[in-house]
Image (cartoon, rainbow, N blue to C red; front, side, top):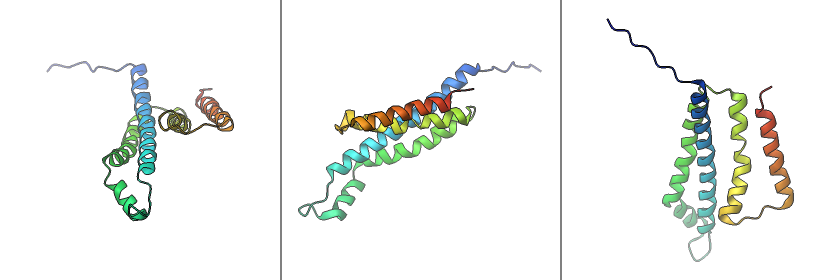
Length: 136
């Protein structure tokens, strides 16, 4: 009988992989928010296009909206894979970056303004996430 030695994966690679899953979850949530906002502003209800019902149906038939719906479901799987061996006190604050990346992404891609007070609040979110995630 031949015994094979089990390969062990270094802890740093496990951590990098788990952080990659969490990063993918953040990116997909941001993508979903951007697409839904962009498509909702495209399908604005008016009297000439049939009103709100027609506008809602147009959004439901929009392929990009369906990719956004899929992009909101996939992060759940990425989250589950990411927290397998990563402490929740690191993983949960990492997901807090969604609250910072969505406004920054909408400013960059959709041209929405970020007033000075909101910028101040966003920096507080980032510093709060960094403080909470810091290992003692």
